[in-house]
Image 1: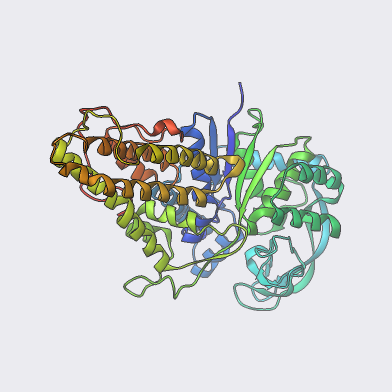
Image 2: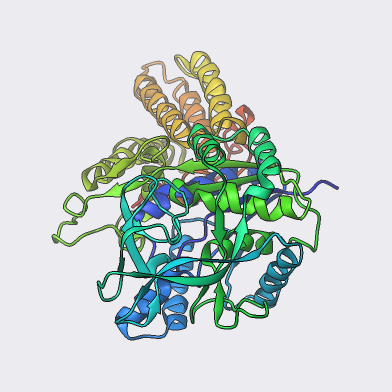
Length: 526
């Protein structure tokens, strides 16, 4: 029995709510692929987690005078609610502070790597804040990345994706702003250089996107680093190694290992195919640390990575009608609905280059759905109600230009299927093709509306209605991965089951005599 195709998305830090940039990154795109494959009859496991032990959670708690577990719990609830409202459906979301056996599993993995000398102690300089009496690592420190020269937090640079542990230029405490003073600190590291050949072989065979290939080849050329996998602190999973009492497992190492727990690693065979969705700033965990953990244990996991760049948010361009910034997923989902927001972030997805969020472009996305998709469906449902008493007519699809349109729609189905598939995944192209399908159906409807005025009284106007109902039926499957809420409403109106495979055969109207049940409001969006 073959294993399911495993899809993962980067666990977000539980230090705040999801904003539109998160949705434009890994989550909606990964859900599109998952929905398409499931509808096609393939077995899929779609997982993520919440990075409850991220350093940023502790920093936010310290700034607000709260306990980090309270911060993590509150935002974990908000994040999972935002996923649900946006239609992103995971099979398993790892919750580190709630999942039974998680902490023991992570510590056992850590101990196994330590016993194999994959993890080893090193003494290195690390910034220390004397006023706060605290070691500075991760989100506790800001400084200039020694690799790319941009300013950011410690740990991993979100611009170049390289680790900068202890190497930040001009380190400053994130809490009090005091300069970090270098001190010798003995910690546990995962040296990557001993795994050079195994990792290089893995990267060569993985077919990495150019952006990640450059990262990995640069790491090899410069000498693979020793990656800190623990630090002295109070927040996180305790390190179970003698001599390191008071140390915690690093959040980046945990984020990489969390995927394995979500899959059920050590309990079932690893999948034949894995597809990761990640922002470039977090890609080190996916493309370096996770393979390093596995190859060190003698496992080569076939992985593919879809990496996105940053979706920049200009607060001035993101203000709502009341003048308040509108960037949070909850606010935008409440105002625009999941169909509009999902469709928009797929169109604006920062693939290969950074893109910008603009409120006016989101408004235009809603106008497109209302003025084209919903307008056409409203006219179609009205025509069926007025001319056929609300029931599907007993006629074959037809009308002027139908045969040419049908051939075009069959080609469109194949193109959409390709754009949804893992080999040529391109949801932006899928959205463009679906728009063209609706525009063609709209034009076809306008051309054939004159059939009802024939003096001969023949029922030739029914065939174009059936043809448009066939297109509407197809959209309950073809649009399902992008806009599942609207596709579900459309399926309910047509008395069909939503989410079928994306195939030309979906272009078939409901059975004659079926009483339609159009929604009282818009079908797609609101």
